[in-house]
Amino acid sequence: MEALFWTLVLFSQVLGVVSVILLATWLSEYGGGYDWDCGNGVGSYHYLLLTIGMVFLYAEAMISFRVTHRLGLSYTAEKAIHATIQSIVVVLVGIGVHAAFVCKDTQGPEKAGKDLYSLHSWLGLATIIVFFGQWIYGIVMTVALRKLDRSWQDLLLPNHAFFGILIFAMSICSCLTGVNEMAIFFVENYNQIVPSGHLANAFGLCLIAFAAVTAYVAYKPDFQIPENRRHPECNAVPTSEGIATSGSGKVVTNPTEHAHQKYGATEETAFKEMDERETKEV
Amino acid sequence: MEALFWTLVLFSQVLGVVSVILLATWLSEYGGGYDWDCGNGVGSYHYLLLTIGMVFLYAEAMISFRVTHRLGLSYTAEKAIHATIQSIVVVLVGIGVHAAFVCKDTQGPEKAGKDLYSLHSWLGLATIIVFFGQWIYGIVMTVALRKLDRSWQDLLLPNHAFFGILIFAMSICSCLTGVNEMAIFFVENYNQIVPSGHLANAFGLCLIAFAAVTAYVAYKPDFQIPENRRHPECNAVPTSEGIATSGSGKVVTNPTEHAHQKYGATEETAFKEMDERETKEV
Image 1: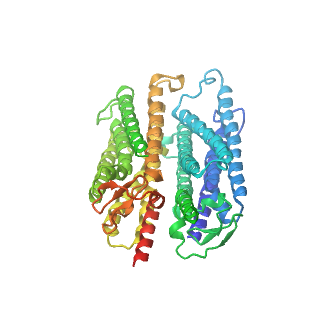
Image 2: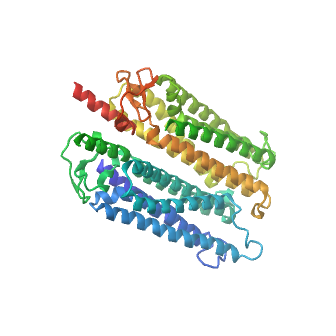
Image 3: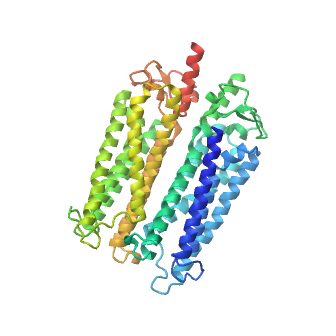
């Protein structure tokens, strides 16, 4: 199962890098190139930065806990990496959205000020609003988690995870409507089956494939890590793959043969099982 | 928790119906109306049937097990309802895709035969291919499940569930790129902030909200039902909400106070816990 995990992670990285290369190439060759003056009215930076931020890096943050835990990092380091990546995304989103508005405003009175009319822009705005909410929620949760009891944690964490996947899906929708829009506006004879159209379409499908593989890595219960590593008092809890964590988060060998039947599932279960065990012990 | 479940289900239905009404109104008022001759080149049936099929009905099938189980239906009836809805979707997809091609071919030599050039069409085609694969997979799984041992079931079911959500997300992406495309082609002065543009955009956002709420209902572990109802030999297993099922799938009161800590999580856990208990009992 660990071999499958790493294979899928590697595959996702290849798809992610190929997606970004396809987009960058398309923008350079057919989308008007890169300039802050938006010479050809494209605002390439908007498309590139938002895709790198809200899709590629966002996905990295989404699967980061499962990857970093297997590398033996401490729980604090895992959280710091997740939070750092998402904060970089916030910066990229800020610059990327600014590029879109700057671009419009340099295109003369005909286009200046006519912002937020398309479905792509409404979707993108909704995605960014929910994303910022989630980012704040993540920070508050991190601060509050240590002070709240576990029933609150059980409520907060699965919702954070659900909104994480939802925002990711919304980002993909925003990207695809954006590329679709761009292809219609900028690909000459789009309906004549031309290479520049194919390149834009291939980018879209590659992005979907990247999203599917990373979402699978984030979803699959067998890839789950023990969430009770947040509580140093709960040591040596086995997972589905024979990994056990001590309070420091180091990976050690799993001594219990059937342990995956108890801890291989979801965060909630791991938590509740621990609670149950502790209650019995008390 | 049951009150939250039914509130969200009701809310999702309202969003779904509003989405379909928004689309039907838009198609009627601004999208060229309904005719198989595609008078205005829109092929309204394509958009309407695919949205009703691949989004609205598909979502109903996605959450159907959680709803029908609470209504006290037998496991066989639950499966029959899920399979029937998905089969209706297959028929609607067939007619809807045919409408798109018929439409193109009635628009004269300039447009005839120029199919599958846009990102929307590539995405839609990919979605339909994966959906048909999943439909076949569902049928094969249903036939095979009763003959395979549980390690196979553990492998097959979570993948069916994952691909279910993935296809749903891809359907939403296909719809949004389709509406985006249509709005660009058919809304006059789309960038002048006009009502017909707002209606198309509102449909898009409403669809996203519908997708988010139904996906939440399908995802939330607390809403889980005991998957071991597939096996009549495993009776009276409690769930997170004090519901227990007998072999007939009838809902009865949960006698065990902490039982949700053992059975409230995922399919996999419920299965494995049952296996474990059975092994011990043997």
